[in-house]
Image (cartoon, rainbow, N blue to C red; front, side, top):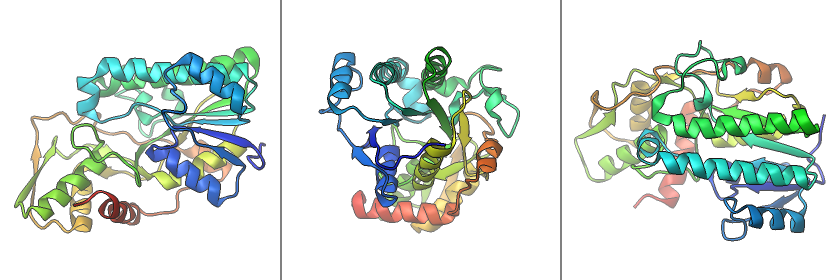
Length: 312
């Protein structure tokens, strides 16, 4: 339906986990000319800067992968930041993309947009059918606004703006800060530090019973390139691993890969978040894309990268 070949492609958020994976994938596939501005070159929160940069560089395609992200603790502690920062990024770039005639825009959301008690696996049609999970509603509301803004521009002006919703992501260039990271990199950091310091136990937030779906970020990048070239509809599209694992099983798997031999303890006084969040990816599967790498292999690759780049 569309080709990225010979296009000028802006990756907003090119220094982040998703953006850097997209850059690697697009480079490997020989797709177009990449525009990879850093935050100093393109401040997405400043509408004037965004408009001027877009006028100067004139991208044909925009991947909107920039966002303020974090886990349960970060969302709970900084609700204003998560709402305002993400709204500003979306509004400024999507509006400028329309005004300057961008051919294709791919907005990246998150599975947290769905209602807390959505029917499992979660279909795209579940959006806005119930209350959100309170521990990340600020981020979710901002992402829902981005989806609706893309739909509004498509409806009113015929723009080829689409939205893709990935499940929980991890991989190279992830955030491993224990205060602001998501569950998988946080566990990896905890178990690595415990192994290094010869600790006899590691505490994990929650009961360990919630089920989650995790996708390696390089797999997501491959899917986003596929979606950009093969999907053009009003409704957003789910991107997931199509497999789920409990937090307890995940902790045990990461401990095994890291080489931590001590006890894993669960702190049930801490929130679990949504008890299950499995996405229905049948729409994407019917188009012809499925993930290829196992969770264990992907975590092993991520841990090797962590040791090479972060671990002391």
